[in-house]
Every structure is written in structure tokens, then in C-alpha cells.
Image 1 (cartoon, helix red, strand yellow):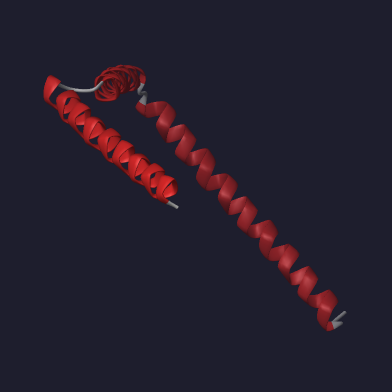
Image 2 (cartoon, rainbow, N blue to C red):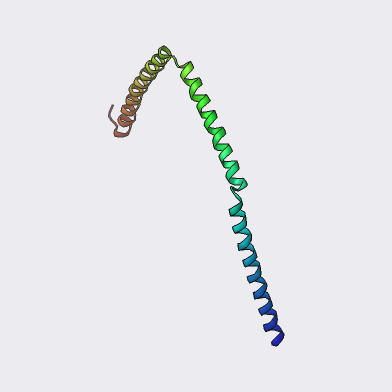
Length: 101
């Protein structure tokens, strides 16, 4: 029983030593500066911002008001037609379900 207690005590001391060393190394890493992950994240955010700005500039350069008007007109006509045909279909289904001639 004495050797088991000694073995358990040595394992506990080993684990505590590893914990203390790991904590000291983590503090040293934090003190040295930004981590690789944060540097990569900053560079990706920079690339994303520049791509977003370039896309916005391109959109503003190619924006045509006449084309926008045509698209809006086509959208309103097509939605009006869909509403009409949906109403007709709904009436037909209701008349079939109720049995009205």
C-alpha cells in the first residue's frame, strides 16, 4: 500500500508541475505580442474590407437608372399577373371542394 500512495503522490506532483509550467508559458506567449491567429484574422478582415470597397465602387460606376426602372416595371407587371392567376386558381379549387357548378 505504501508504494501505491507514493506512486499517486508522484503523479499528483508531476501533474501540478506540468500545470505550473504550462501557465508560465502561456503568460510568456501573451506578453510577447499578438498571436498568429489574431494576425491572420486582421489580414483577412483587411482583404474583406478592400474587396467590399472595390465591389461597392464597381456597383456605383455601373448603376444605370433606366435599367433599374425597367426591372422595377417588369417586377410589378409579373407580380400582378401572378396575383391574378393565383386568384383564379384559388377560386377553381374552392369551387371544386364545395361542389358548386
